[in-house]
Image 1 (cartoon, rainbow, N blue to C red):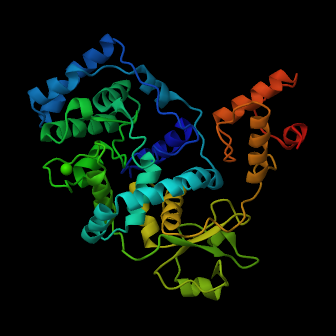
Image 2: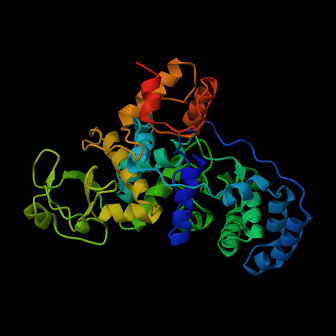
Image 3: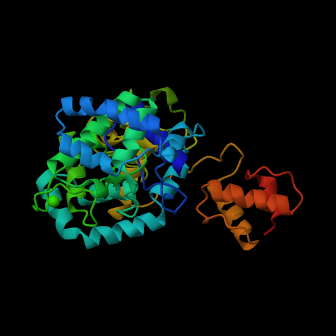
Length: 413
Ligand SMILES: [Ca+2]
């Protein structure tokens, strides 16, 4: 989970398009973050003292600054996360297995029903469909379940002090202090992920300042509280101001004609749906795709995997988070929340020659043999690897922690 989130975060931070957190709610590990503890660090204290005049120069008043830092501290775990170089990017299949799992779909439909009134008001005000706002919520924090409890001033000051991308984190820290100065929340409630994404929809502080709204009218833009109203409206405001077109799809799954030139795939090539139709591209029922405006074809797992025709609203979601899997995840989850079907195209076997069904079967067999894989979603995460290692060790095999067809066979039927 950490690696996934981190890869997404880094991608969007590096691209300078950072809107929000990038999928705090995405991950095979259902467990929340372990609590992070501050430890004394004289060098961090010195950095804070040196930062204080810069913050005051940026318009932060001394009282706000001192209140914010009274309970703040250096968080070594944040540095560890930031330096952890084991990041990787999940395949689109794995990403969708998590982002649009049956569980996340059913939780989302329940959330949609529970908040139908306010989501409908948000849709009227901002022109962003309830299912889309709910899908962002689901991917970002699992509908508010994983908002993050890391103190933001501590996390951002630790990252700014550490120095790698220090300027970026210092600007986020100043934005966080502005949030406190505005009175929208107080230091105890200013919490989020280790890299500074906050609340139900995982806004980073600068995005909060630019887009957060007080939708329930209590005078505070509160994206942290149990009531998701302001956070959902803020996400809608963000998408709306990024150019969202109501009633238009983000994309549709399509089938490509035999011999389709994969060089035409990618966001860099845009054509009208009619032009794609003329080339033989069809929706999954074999019909021409209606004209939703200029469109690109995406084949995130190559020609052997599913294909999507994507439109302007795809690009709007990239303003929130530029990772392609993220946008497909949010878009597809919104379709599922609207009652749409799962992805119909086949996914190719992974690098080990295993399909998702193989990986799920392996997880089921390990589970029945008494090794906890943390679920049977077909996504190989740290729990599945640990289960494989434990099985291998107990059976006198070389310990690899890696799934394989021979291992699946060895585990029998
Ligand atoms: Ca409010």
